[in-house]
Image (cartoon, rainbow, N blue to C red):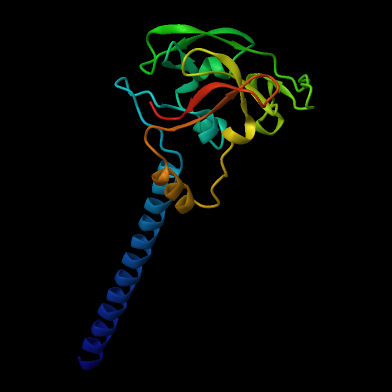
Length: 204
């Protein structure tokens, strides 16, 4: 009887240990998944318009999958213009430019053929449309853009480029440090030296 009672206690003890270990493993697995999902969600956080479409600059995305639904393409008469993601990634040609709500067409934008044969200005800098590049690395040094007042010109690629974060935590810190209204950069003539206006990057 005593041996039977002792065996029961040992069995109960083993079941208790298994339950505790199992609970700890489940908690760790759930926490890891939660942390991973949160990191992916916050890595690039674009604002949304009233229709639930994300909008912002393509430069903030680290991959095609992370591009917003509406991609900033300059301004038309002082109104910020956006391209639909499908148009931005589509075939060459003229595509509509929409307002931030993605419904009203305010202009057009030319999506060029994807090539790297950009001309050079008198200073030896390449210039052209960023849409003609096959990747961010092959974009020209001067990228065609439309200023806040509708002036056509070029922005320096280095002014558009941002340092890519090395971790999800760094990405969140960079995102939090950015001004909600975006930032202004110079708009140049094709020579890349003469300032002719202002280009607004980011924000609504």
